[in-house]
Length: 102
Image (tube, rainbow, N blue to C red; front, side):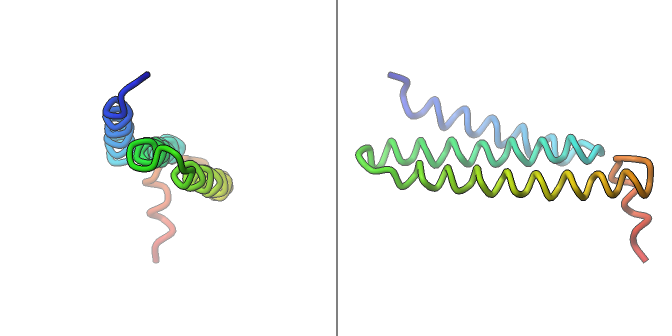
């Protein structure tokens, strides 16, 4: 059986890779993927803490399913926004959105 600490290390790595990708990327799709990495790290933490603190219950697993559902809805809305930005500015760069300011 895999120790719980390995899940925490994996979660921390995914979280910091997601934060680094979100800060350094200028492409909207790459930024969306980075946000999804951060949400996956949160899911791993929920499941690992559930296994560590309450091995017989399923609250962490239910919270993980809720976060997965929210992430799917967030991805659908974000992709729709990115498609509209691309149609208007013919670019998927964050710099093209700065033109929307008044």
